[in-house]
Image 1 (spheres, rainbow, N blue to C red):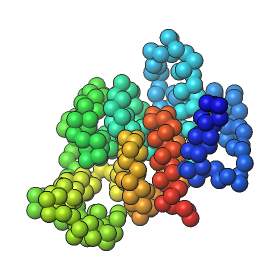
Image 2: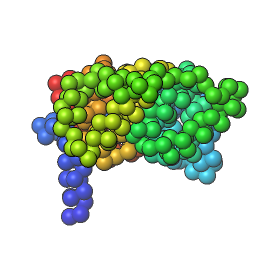
Image 3: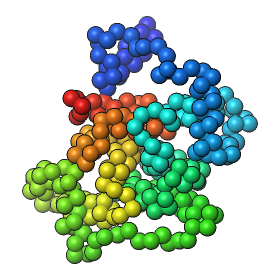
Length: 288
């Protein structure tokens, strides 16, 4: 009896995401056309591309779990979809920051450099996290990123990327908000309760979008894609995920870009948060 409820609950979650409609019957078998030997070979090749000769200590103590992870991440996910290696690496970094799972932060910073991300792009990806996961999580991750830069002879501080002043940060932030969310920003500002305006108007527009989104080093499409990823990784943020699904579409990221970003996130955030975010994508971009 208990098994019946578990199966029913699992199917309900899958149908809620829009992956499987009731009329479609059972899910197709297979692994996207990847056979076992190909998956193993691809995993080793791609792991070398991203990680070089680095090996997790668990490869000695828990080789089965290590093999499962590497064959999923590098044997299947790393070669699927619309994202390039640089984008995948930056998405992985913000997932680690959001989850505060920093044991591999240095490893994946090195991987991002190997994948072609510049030090500025890596730093800006971490900075992008600050309005969404808070300064302490961002700073904890940044310290590890900076250790990698120092070890690799990259001079710190990196070149400044800020573009606003104290006088322009609110105005420029609102301009970026409107590029992403349109005239709804005016309505949000007008409807903000008097005692809440600092949060809903001043801090959001001037700090999140003025201080952060206007920075150079990453374009608006990449910043918005990373934002979608980090709030999906946080969990419990479905209202914000839906808003940023629409925001991603407005700046030119496709539905498939978002789906592929969630596939990249899956090994780092698990199925519940991945499926919840996928449900948001399917709800907002139904006709895409």
